[in-house]
Amino acid sequence: MSFKNPWLGFALNNAYANRTLYEALGGLDEAAFAATRPGFFPSLAATLNHIYEVDLYYLDALEGGGLGRAVFDRTPVEDPAGLGRLQSEADMRFAMFCQTLTDADIAREVITDRPEGPMAETVGMLLPHLVQHQIHHRGQAHVQLSDAGISPPQLDEFFLTYDRAETAKPYFG
Image (tube, rainbow, N blue to C red; front, side, top):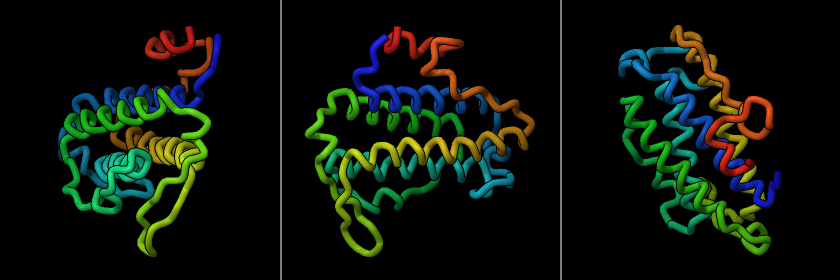
């Protein structure tokens, strides 16, 4: 097995974990999705909308889209299936971005639009932050799923040969 492009692997793992998480939401209606739950954000809807909009923010910076903080000027999505579709689209954008990364791309600086003004960051520092941000908040969503009476799914079965997710097999073998 070869691991030639770790960032593509991390992006695909994010897509797998998000899809698995949204599948667990299955029959959750909008009221249960928005219901108050323990965690940093007060509901599954708030937690998952936060993951999505922060993904949009960093994808915009990585792709040079120029939207900056304007990505946060959106109405939160209250339908779990609808938000799941949007998250899947963002996950695929992230994977496509990572698919062709070169060493020069990793060293390239991009501008992030911060409240204090523009801030230069390297692609090589934004990528692990974006991945870690998702992991951090998916962990919180795990607790919120349990509070909603839904058995939280296993999300870390992507990289290892043992119990590898089917969607990882084409990438790793």
